[in-house]
Length: 237
Image (cartoon, rainbow, N blue to C red; front, side, top):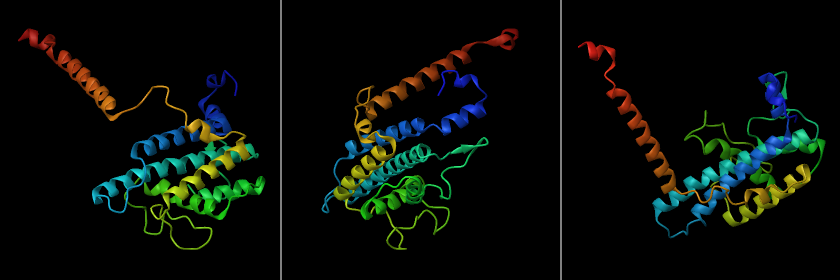
């Protein structure tokens, strides 16, 4: 990508960025880091004897982590599609991976495999299907229709839900799959990037709340100062 890219018309910039595998790979790594921050915060899954509210809260946040991981995989597969000679943006329009549905990770994997095969085992393929569902299910309380949002599973037509998982086994499967796909297609293990500490230091809710309070106070003071100015009409009175 040339240094004067952003001097070009936005349509050309859009197409250049959309067809640059490096951009998709970087976004995949960032999404993986965000997911890892969530999992570092919530820790291991609750025991069967844990409080019901705690269990519900854990799985609710766990869903968001799954969504981010699914989105990271989608970016990774799009980077891989570009690496094997595909395009994502054509004639100023995002066309995506040929013959795949939105967020269908298993379908995207098959499309990339047709150009350069990389073998995944059955557990990894099942996980692709479940993470496809997580991308949609974690964002909204319901899907557009009762039958939408459920990608077909590689082994059976039954609907799959991410919560029906074995956490420890799925963690191992996910890590192996990310390494296999990123090293095979991108010659770079994204897990190494995703586990890097944040340069800004530890992010905490307290820090976020303090920053938000300062911003609110500053805005309020500015508004108060603006309102105290009498103005020309007030002077005439």
